[in-house]
Image (cartoon, rainbow, N blue to C red; front, side, top):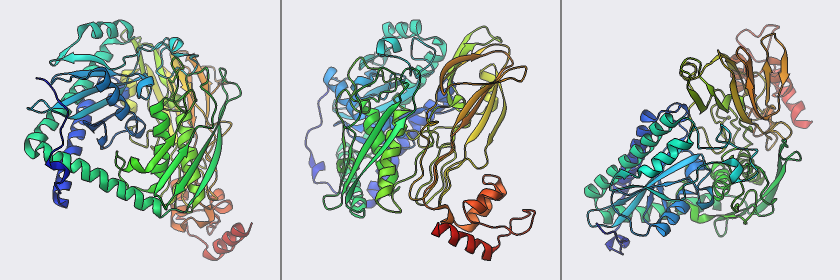
Length: 602
């Protein structure tokens, strides 16, 4: 079956009513959710089957992001469109039954650990109508060290990852066995990888099937008309939101913590400009350092997406994120920049964390400086041990294991209308990843989680506070366990905005069997011995607005829940409780009014 590109049709003039638009939108989102459900229920590794570090979306044949349901923003906001264009360039003659494997961060992908499958949806007339896209973070991607975040790698060669730039992995629905053998030879846990590959392929094929059914049910012309109207409507919603903002420009600076490869750290800045007259937002990342000799450089996809996430976080949920609304947003990047467009062979192994969090944070921080009710405070930083890659040999089976765990990592920032999301994780993850089940982690890995809890007085205070930090203790059982951790935010932590306070600083240490406590660096690869405990404290998210403006009922609830101490409530929030004992938390309204007036005038 030969394939042609879609030709201009009556869809250009076809107008769909609101009911038709809603039905098609629901069908598209249901198709994406079917892909997500397939991946979640059939994947083998913990990072996919438990933590859900994957995303699915649908692109038009013109490489435009159309639908992505509950996917991870850093995976899909910008990148799938660039990848799709490269695939079309490299493989101009699509056939039904084709599938393309891609993970090259130099051609649109986030980083080498995120493997993508793209499948062209080709109708019965041989016309390429859509592309379905599935991306999944691998437990192991062939790196030289047992981690998918090679933060110490000076270049992609030292990183060691397998790189597939748009390789045709299936033809006529049959795998290319040469590629499969290559992967099994280079992956430390080949059976785990094989199960995840099958889950990824199954998700993409489910998406293809659902889209072919949709074409049969609704027709290609109506779907083309829907895409055009949805993009135009989304652009209008974006323009309307921008026109409500004040005109102006803000520049915000930050600095990534130093670590052995880069002891001086990495200074960054962003300039965000809002033009409500033209209904455009521009984010300029060009005035930043060149690519660094470490694995924390951003890929083009992540640099774009990081800034875009910061903007969309600042505008509210009424603006859809798709190729239509993206027309009103310009992200300015330059080549060979650590937060721009990297040149091969610079490593971008940790592009979905670290500098990505920094860019997103300073973008929404800049938006917050423009007006109250806009922007957000900063997410907590880093990938602490409770979210790190662990590896070793399981004494119960004698087999190697490698996986990224996702225990308690909070980090959520306060916003203009809500407190920080306790399960936010990273700025790019936006709360879309699940937290691990302790019981499942203990079944899959030779360790025991002896403690996991939120910590009092670790959230950034504000009219809307950040999420509190969390403590996790993980004890090795019967074998050494290696942790690879790249936790930022100790020297330059998450900052509050518009009078909100900063989030608490993260920490990590090892508790020896004899009780000795050994402090460890935030960036490390080290093994704990049998019986030793890795202790992880993630930082808290920062606060938005003055704490003394926080609703009294919310402060009372935080104190009763143990998230804020009574002393902090009085000193920072200006909320005074009656009696020596807290009891049911009765507020002394007169004393509270006086204390809040004092804080406001300070």
